[in-house]
Length: 225
Image 1: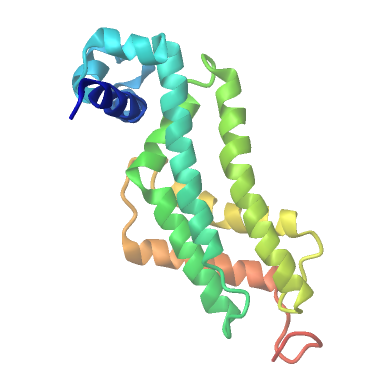
Image 2: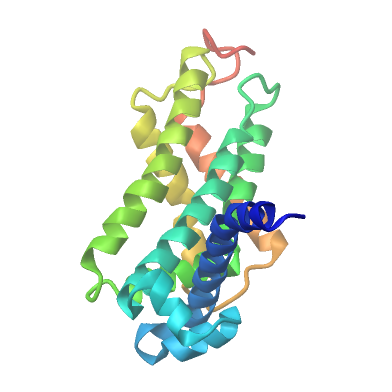
């Protein structure tokens, strides 16, 4: 390989390497912040966790506050992607709406139960006074998007006569609340691992309650029964 070509190849690899290193730093930062909290976490420990030199962390993220902010946003985006995938699993052409909703509820609860999700919520709540805008940002980029996606599915089910949700957004909010409320209580705000059987019970109870409010009675006009 000529020197000129080697220079070009190195140049092509540089951006990818920089992106990978930044991702490694942010992943390490979230791990350390989740373990020790913002105040007790130090940049040196984050650098060691990421396998880079301390100055490299500052070169990529400037300071500890920005490091925290970006690490939380990345974790929130990853959590949002998992939740959106769960909602997209609600098939509008399903034969049994109850079972379809239970499957989605179980998938959402598994996302909620993940260690990353617990850590994300703990960090957001504990540091809300230090980063007052961060909770709103995560809400808009994450929770609101998932609710909107669920509302879209419920609106289509309403149009097809499967539900009676006159306000799909409100129905979606209530569906999510029926899952999150019991899960927070059963997990003692993330300090207790909720077993699968208990998680499935929460999902079924949530769907039963939801369909009592928004489901059509079998044989009713438009119910498909």
